[in-house]
Length: 386
Ligand SMILES: [Zn+2]
Image (cartoon, rainbow, N blue to C red; front, side, top):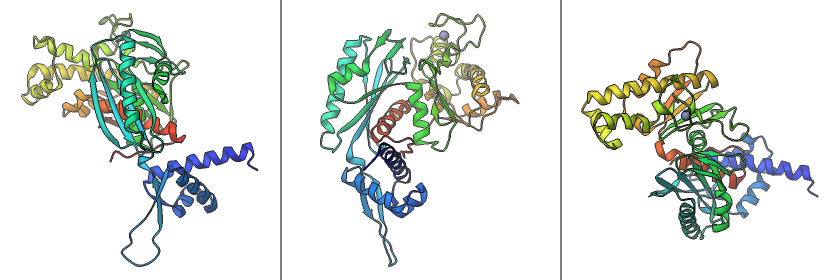
């Protein structure tokens, strides 16, 4: 008879076994036993169940010399598919990944409206299309995670999306009703930090990811847990005041960090100085290559203001890894050196400062990874990009 406790332990073992198989890509039952500390019989029983459920596959490794060739276990990448959505102000990005986290394709749709029902209908159509496309797989579309550029409650309802002026929306339930797929809602900065942990810095327990786009968001991983605060609103770091009586902010205060260090604030200043309405990353790149003095002066000033806020964050969290997610800084070759030169406090300490390799894809990648984690019910997840 399986008691409550026994079934609980079985579930924990299952989660550990799946985590380690994904982390290692391919692993034998004997090595799995060594790594997990579980006995061989437990591994055998669990592996048999996971194989029967189509979640694992077995392969026999080729050996050049004679002898026993171990049978290796790996995740069945095609058992199901995960959809990550980055719901930004004017562009919605969709990334479909297999169960190993490998992105199969990414596409974007421009949106001109802020109307909730219109966007809901468009999302429902897209999700239904992906559901149909994945229907051949044993588990089909395993889940959809949507990154929201706004404030998300701990119960996954949307409290506020400033750029669409959405208040108190239940996108999760509305989409589940329309599509019949498991939908999860999460803040975009949290998903960016999750992508960094899962795809790049698996061993890190203390990681911060600052996203600098139309606003500034902070995803906070402390002691391997996403720090969300009492209601889920932690990380609204763009509204930290860094200039007393400074530029007015949409939050009602003056001198907020995002008025000086978000990418859109930089682009606004740069456009004004070049007498243009809008500018693109391509134009910035060209001006940097041409050594345009105005662009360089504004970039140096931008980095100074960015560093003020980073200094405060470092003092607050003492991070192991601080990742800056910015397409703008990826264009500027000296960005890291110049930021580090401003971070000279003897008190504020961090181990590593990096610019994210994932750029704007981080949110939808983190979203895919979170859907996989929820589906497999694992505590830890380490995925590979290739
Ligand atoms: Zn503000």
